[in-house]
Length: 249
Image (cartoon, rainbow, N blue to C red; front, side, top):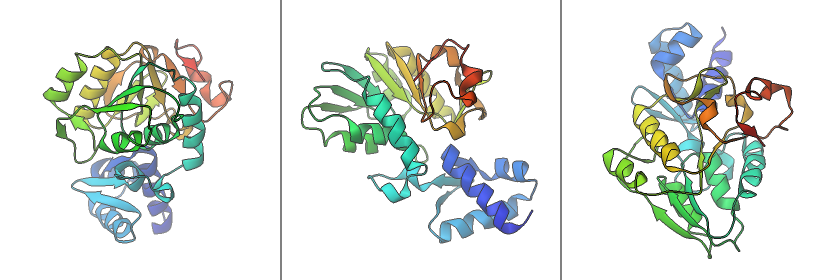
């Protein structure tokens, strides 16, 4: 494999899954960890990724404020966000996680709606503050340096005390058989608590993440009420999910 091809594959994996580990990339690309480490450093030096211990983060995933040019698959995420905000109604208590797709949802909330938002994401909270008629509650606790959300026992305890009408979550992997999966145990724990607390759970993901699997399971697809992608619900790519019990919009 040529270096340019390898670098392109690494960048795509980072942008799709937000976070990658050197060990996983080494195995997937069948090259040494030292080679992957050098490639990641080169990508970081050119400001295409953020290098962290043991791997790298997507720039769009870790951004604190809204920078359209840093958001991977921005057009697709706008389509998803427009579908998602159609579910919002006055008086709702809405729980929303982090990630660039949920940040887009926060940006596109209609300004006339009177909603109370709960979020574990600082960047999502800051975006939600732009809406004059909505209230925003940040569920604080220990902040994950890689996921940029609150994690740990404090936030889990707070989630156990609320009953949101609807919850918007993202994912690093979704597969009709393997379910919703992540690469970070603390993130998985928070998402499990979010799902348990909520009356309706909406999973928002770009189609490139469909049929991909990470190492730690969050839940089965059947535990999600709605699945939103940029695709038409009848698109062939979504066929494996039609019989899982999830509504696709």
